[in-house]
Length: 545
Image 1: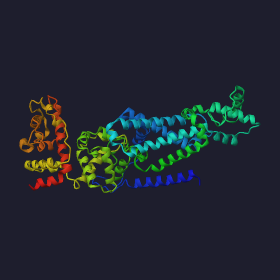
Image 2: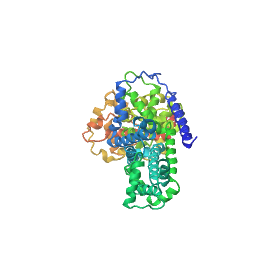
Image 3: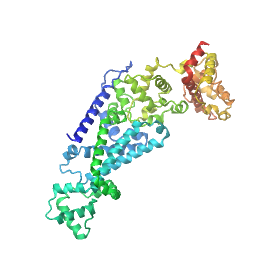
C-alpha cells in the first residue's frame, strides 16, 4: 500500500469511529421531565426551505452581520468547490465532464479562484476574532486550529502547484510519457517554449529567439494543449512561482514538488481525522441541526424537546461567539470575571454534563452562577447562526442545578437584615475579590436625582407588595439617595436589590435619565462575587449568629 492509501484508511477509520461515538452521545445521560425519548421529525417543505436558505445560502449567518456572511460564504463556497471539483474530481467532475483534466481550463482557473476565496474568508475570520475584544478573550485553541488546518490545506496546495510549475522533473516526466520527439531539436524547442510561456525553470537557459519559440509553440499545439492550459490562468500559483524564482534551483534540486505533495496530503488527512473533534464537527452537525429545526427558533410543532435533539444542538455550535457578543447579561462578565456567564462558554460545560461527565467544584460553581444570571431573553437563540435552541438548553439545565448549587438570591432572601449585615461584614473582611468601581461608586451619577419617586411608582416589585418598606427594606429612590451620599455598603443588604426583576421600567421612566436598573443589577452582582469567593464559610457563620 502507498502512503496515500495508508493515510486515507487511517483518517477514515478515525473519522467514522469518532462521528459514531459523538452521535451515540447525543442521547446522553441528561433526562428532563418535558423531554421525549424519540423525535417525530420528518423531512418536509419547511426542512427543504431551511436546507436552501440557512445551509446553502447561509441566511442565518447573514442575520448577524454582512461581514460574517461574507467570510463564511467565501470559505463555504470556496472549500466546497475544491472538495467536489478537485479532491473528488475523479468521482464528481469526471462524471459530469468526461473530458476533464485538472490542468485544463476552466478547472485550473477555478481551482485558484476557489482557493483564493477560501484564504480571504479565513483571513476575515481571523481578523474578526482579533478585532472584537470579547471574542478575542474567548477564543480557544480549537478555534485557531480549524482556521490553521484549512489554511494549511489551501496554502500547501498553492505551493504544490507553484513548485510543479517551475519543476523540470515534472516537465521531463510529462515529455517521457506523452511526447515522442523526432530530433533533439524538438525537445530543446519545447523546453524553450515552456520556460518562456509556462514558467518552468531549467538548470540551463534555453534559446528565446522567435524561431525556436515558434517551433516550440507548434509542438506544444500538437502534443500538449489537449491536457495543459497556459499556467497563467492559475493566477495565484503562477504568481507564487514567479515570486519563488530566486530559490527555484534549490527547490528543484530538493524536489519541492514532492515535499509539498506530502505536506498537502497530510494536511488533508489531519482535517479528515479531526472532523469528530471540537469545532471540526460543526460542518456535519450544523446543517443537520438547521434542517431538523426547520429554521425556527423554537422546536417545530410536531416535535418535543428530546435529549438527542439537545445533544445534536450542542454539537452544532460553531463557537462563532455571536451569542456571547449579544448576550444581555454580558456586562456581568465584566464585573464577575466568570466566563461561563457567556453562552458560548456555558455551552461547553453543559455539553460535558449532558455526556455524564463530572465537573470540578470550581467549574460547577462557575456554571451555576452563569446559569442563574441568564435572563432567558432569547437573544442568543435569535442570533445563533447554527439554529441551536439555546433557550431550551438553559431552562432544562437550570432544573438540573437546583439541588447541586444553591442560589445566592435564595441565600440572601431567606436571611434577616441583621444576618445579611453580618455576612457582608465577614465577606468584606475575608473576600479576595478586588474592589470594583462602577456606576454605584460614582456619586456624581445621582446628583441629578430629585427623589421624585418615579422609579418607585413604576416598579412592579413595589406594586405587588402590601408593605414595601418592610418587605423590601429600601425602595429604589432610597437606594439612589444612599448611593448619592456614598453609602454603597448600606444598600447591598436591601431585599429590593435582590428582588429586582431588571424590567428596566425605573430606568426608562426616570426623568433625569439615571441608570437605576443598571445600578441595582451591579449591586447584586457585586455581592454575588463576594459570596462566590468567600461565601460558603461566611454565610454559615452568619446563619449561626
